[in-house]
Structures are given as C-alpha cells and as structure tokens.
Length: 310
Length: 310
Image 1: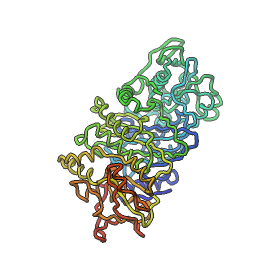
Image 2 (image 1 turned 30 degrees about the vertical axis):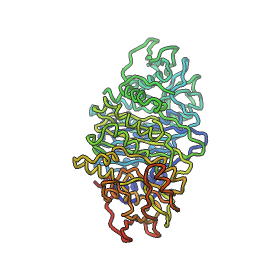
Image 3 (image 1 turned 135 degrees about the vertical axis):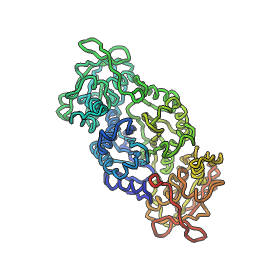
Image 4 (image 1 turned 30 degrees about the horizontal axis):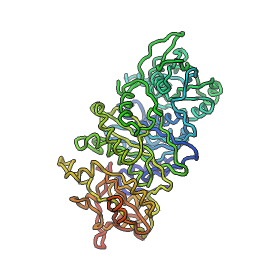
C-alpha cells in the first residue's frame, strides 16, 4: 500500500525518496511501519548512529558511501545475532547543504538495504547542523545467536581480515590518502548476514560483530560469558598492508567474532562466501578478561575504540 | 538475562543507565534486542528524532523533560496505529556537558516508558555537538489502525484540546514564559495509547496523531484516503487560553485525529479517560483537500508545521 502524504517541504522530500527507492520502500507514509512476523520467529532489533565530525568527516566519503556505511553498520548487528533482516527505519538529519543532494545519500542507503535483501520500512527526516543518520534494523530469527553461551574450551573464530578500516581512518584523520583497497574496507564494509546464519547452523554458539575493535569486542564476549578469552596474536588475520595493532584496536570492521564448541568448517566457508574464517584462540578455563598470546606468553593489549575516551 | 559489557567509558555510561533503569531495561548489552511477538500480532515500528536547536532549546526544558518528550513523541506513533508498545530503543547523542547529567535524561525517558507500560530494549550512545535523541518504538497490534480506510460520510474526531504546545513554543521562542498549564502541555505531552486501542475497538477506522498540526495532519488523512475533509473551525477543541490558529497550525500535540463510520461514544470516552473526544467534521463526498468551515462557508487555512520551510 502506498499512502499519499499531504503538502509541505518535508513531505516533498519524503516523496522524492519514495520515488527513488521504488519497491525497495514498503508503505512509507503511515505513522508507523507494519510487518508480519514469520510464525515462531523472534524479532531482533538494533539501532546505530553515524554522525558527521564524530563518526566520519564528509571529506572522507561520498554521500552514497556515508549512507551505505551507516546502513551496513546497523545491519551488522543483525548478523551478530544470526537474524534475517526484515526491514530498516531510516532517520536522517540533514544540513541545508545536503537537501539538494539527498538522492545520493538515498542511493547509498538503498545499496546496503539491497545487499542485505531487505526493505526500507519508514523513518524520519529533520534539519540539523551536521549530517547524521540513525539506522534502526529489525530482523527475524528462530534462535538469535547472542553473546552468551560460550564456555571454557570453546574455539574462537573471526571472519575476514581485520585492520583495514582502522588503517584507513588513521590515514584520513592525518590528511593522507589511504591505499584504495584499505579505503574500500572503510567506505564499503560488508555485513556478514548470510555468513552468520550459515555458521549458526553449523555450531557457532556465541557471536559479536567487531564494531569496537577485536580487543574490545573480545572483552564484551569475555564479560558476557564470565570467561577469559585467549587470542593468539599471530593467528589474527590482518588485512594486506596493515599492522596487527590496527587489527586489534580498530573498530568498524563488521566482521564477526564467534565461539564454537567444535571446529567450524572454515574451508567450506571460505569457498562458499569468498571470506576467510580463522581460528584465533579459545575460551580459557578461568578469568574474565582477554589475553593476547604470542608463543604461549601473554602480551599487552592496546586500548579499543571508545567514543567517550578519545 | 543481563549481559555484562567489557571495559571503556562508553560502556561505563551504558552500565550507569542500566543500573538506573533497573527492570525497566530488558537485556541491554547484546548486539541487538530480542522480542517474542504475541502469536498472530503484527509488529508496528516507528522512529522519531528530537534535536537541540531544531526541535527544542535546552533553556526551555529540563533534561528529564527533553527525554520524556522525545520518548512520548515516538510512542504517539504507536497510539496512532492502535498498537500496544512492546519496547523502545534509545539512541542518544550527548555533548560533553550532558555526560555527568545523563541520569536526569534517563529518568525522563523512563517516566515516558513507564507511562506507556513498556520497556527499554537497547539503544546507542554517541558523542555529538548538540543533544539529540532518536527514539525507536516497537508495538504489537492484531489490526493496526493506519491512515487509510476513511470514506465519504465518515465522522471526524479529535482527542483532547489543541494549541497548547504551539502557544508554549511561540512564547518560548520569543523569550517569554508561557502560563504553567500551557507550558506543561508542551513539556509533558501524553501519548494516547490506551485511548486509541479503546477507540479502535469501538469503530475508529483511520487515525493519525497530530504531530505536524491539525491542519497538516488532516491533510495527510485527506491525501491517504483520496478524500476531502471538512473541519468545522468552531468545533475544534482549543486549549484554555489559546487561539484557534495555534490549534490548527501547531504541532507536537500528540492528540489523535480519527475517522469513524458511526458516532463514537464520546461521553463514555471522556468519563473513562478524563480526556475530551470531539466531533469536528466529516469526510466530504469529493475532493482531496482539507476545508475549514465556519457557518457552512470555507475559510483559509494557515500553513502547518514543516521542518524544512521555517
């Protein structure tokens, strides 16, 4: 059902978006969106904000990339729960400068929504002094994966190769141009949605997406399970041309850190998805922290990504 | 399930919020929130943003009021759909100045969540140059009400008395102090959640919440139903001490505008909820606009609230 809107500049913008998004936008125009759950499925919800001057500078990214990244970051939380996306709510604050270029932003959002096989359910537009996006995602899962459930002896895995976004961000904040491949990891991240469901069906027990950095997110997994995590620093898959420090401390990866009781089929995973799945450590017998190991000895951890400490 | 978080200033703040909210906050700490739908219910979702310098100035309201209003504004969209709230996702951008006072904001959010009989499911914290809240609400409804379904001959009703928030806002933007009752309508609005469900069960067919102003939201209802709406300007319930222009053009009321095929039980409604329900007009035979009528003649409409035109 397409619901017509009354007059006004704000509604003209919404009409513009709806026209551009076409069948990707479902029923925009009511006070709220409506979805029908698959019987027996639980609903999984998350929200994520991406703000100019806090999470990005517009010199670093095109408007389409800003939209794509913000949407993918939110969708990654559904991946972490092994949920199937059912829709996205798009809340945008626009500066007057952005209004004439709203279609570029809309196209980036649409790309990420399409890549996740989902739809746009609605949202909110407002003026602002900076460009900002708050993306809310809703998914369905019969058995959401969550962070807890790991126990001593479990193996730890990560998807992909880490550190690209952190290296890109470091270059960009220093006014340098990152290598194209490194920049692409920052500008066009992937949410591991189908990968997570595939792994959940093959024995993954607990999962977190690496949005705060491997060290920090491993800390969350350790805290959630009241367990220590041992990570072999030499096993961490590092993105080509990037250092292991970036792989540990860098955030906004949108790769997954998983615990599994038995080995996961990493070769089959790599073949099917074209993405590495690497065993990087294990859940230890006691403790509640993250231990970085090299040659069987503990080494010091760099601090993770934290919005309020930098 | 309470899920522990790892170290970091951001997570310290989340821990502070979780402690303050107690049992009102359910399962914060996973990558996403999980809810189990009531079998057969559809899920209703909406998101709403409240930004400093755009939607409010902090001189006008306490932090608790800012939190309460933003939450109620979002919950009002569930009321408009006659949905039962199932939870709220709280996305906050904080200035450094707000961090030590986050509990005041949290208490206002909690009041609104409690008033709606729902819970806090999760959210997002980030830094910002201005204070901003994006509240996402999820509800359940077997038959969501929506904007469409009205047809010629239907009667139009509004809940409450209109114009208070607009009058308050006009005073505040002029640096004046609004009368206490008028200010309270702005600072402590109510979302008509139980009222909407009661009316939907008694013949309300289409509904919109009056967030953009009666004239503008009537325009949405007209457009959604491809019908003209005739509103008798003398029948509009106006808040004590306020003019009818504020009742027509003012937004952020969070009262409801409803269409019904047969008369709604307004006396029983008023008795049960302590809120007026007033017949203000009807859906006309033809056209697609809003017609303000006085003594059977059309009068001109003032423009509604529009973020991008003022």
